[in-house]
Amino acid sequence: MDVQMKRGLLEICVLSAIRDSDSYGYRIIKDLKPYMEISESTLYPILRRLEAAGCLTVRSETHNGRLRKYYHILPAGEERIRRFREEWRELTAAYRFITRPAAGEGERES
Image 1 (tube, rainbow, N blue to C red):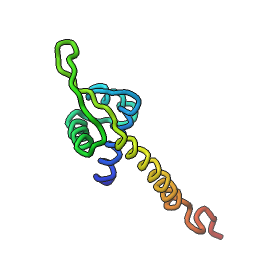
Image 2 (image 1 turned 90 degrees about the vertical axis):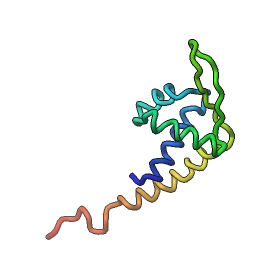
Image 3 (image 1 turned 135 degrees about the vertical axis):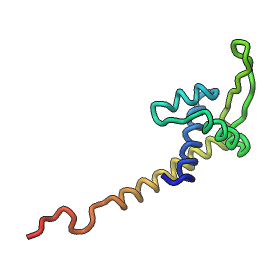
Image 4 (image 1 turned 30 degrees about the vertical axis):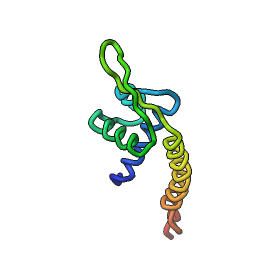
């Protein structure tokens, strides 16, 4: 998969993981696990980029005596998910076009 496409897809998945409720790094990784593997070394740069882009905010809270960062999606992050979903419909249509049988494919030669 193209690096830029994969990066964009990972960002949308991370935003989607915090869409319903604030979350933290380990939880995001665990929530994404049924769909894709993502490591901490991949996740945290994504979270920093999304924060810098104004798609999410971060707050720190103490949990079991340790500081934990919680991520919260902002309207810009919601908008990014919405735009991705629109673009995905176009991409899906293009995929169906690309993978359609070629003229004469499937016909037997006489």
